[in-house]
Amino acid sequence: MRTGVNREDPAPRAQPVIKWAGGKRQLIDRYREFFPARFNAYHEPFLGGGAVFFHLIPPVSFLSDSNEELINMYLVIQNKVDQLIEDLSRHKNDRDYYYQIRSLDVRTLTDVQRASRLIYLNKTCYNGLYRVNRRGEFNVPFGKYKRPRFLDVDSLLAANRVLQRAVLMAGDFEMVLENARPGDFVYLDPPYYPVSRTSGFTDFTDRSFSAKDHERLSRTFDELAGRGCLVMLSNSDTPFVRELYAGYRRGIISLTANRPINSRADKRGPVGELIVCSWIK
Ligand SMILES: C[S@@+](CC[C@H](N)C(=O)[O-])C[C@H]1O[C@@H](n2cnc3c(N)ncnc32)[C@H](O)[C@@H]1O
Image 1 (cartoon, rainbow, N blue to C red):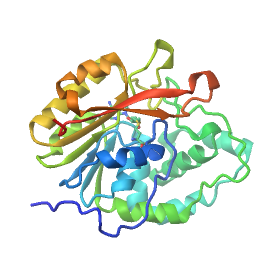
Image 2 (tube, protein in one colour):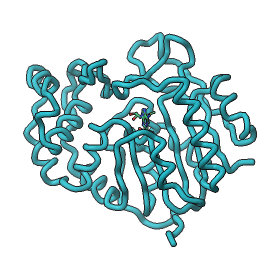
Image 3 (cartoon, protein in one colour):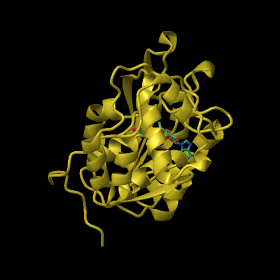
């Protein structure tokens, strides 16, 4: 029998180690009141920067993402943090060096070197984003920051501590169906359904998240809710998304957030945003 979460427990302070597009770090205060007070295991199959995981720090977690570089980074933080710190300490904040690291073929690197490269690029690139082209190559330009913090030992050690209690996997979100049990909390934060044709943001991996994927996700939501999981989803506030979750009418809560994901000023602005909570009836 798994134990319930008591959020009064003192927990080691840990925070997201990388900045991630669509990251929920700035929204935690808005989300906090909606998280269930008690649950068994925690599942986050669109992990990204893991803002919700690092906020909740649950005793038992299943964390996954389709981005293999990202999951490799968390596995290295979990299991080889000392080697990672050593490797990160070799990096330099220099334009030519940045492009040299960016051009490396990850297939020729060790797991520690890949994790170190991802953190270094995330902290030194323009706008701190992870973006790849169609060939899966990281393509963000150098960020010209004065003192980027690519080696943050305290943050890595704190993440290492809390990740000891997590199971990490790379793969599609439907994997969550294999492990989630009644009473578990599942937080779903997919790439958002685009508000308009031009605002689509699907550069997290080399594959995009289509309308069909959103439909598949809503069926996964239904199946999890039907088996007694506490399921929470974040998405854009659009008629398409509202229609997909129409069966949870009372559980659909609209939030509005100012999320500077895009560097182009004309595409910033408030994005209508909602959450769906399966247990609010
Ligand atoms: C909005 S981000 C999650 C942000 C995260 N909540 C945070 O606070 O940083 C969406 C994530 O979904 C991942 N993703 C895209 N398609 C996926 C799929 N089919 N299955 C699992 N993860 C997927 C992306 O790699 C990305 O990390």
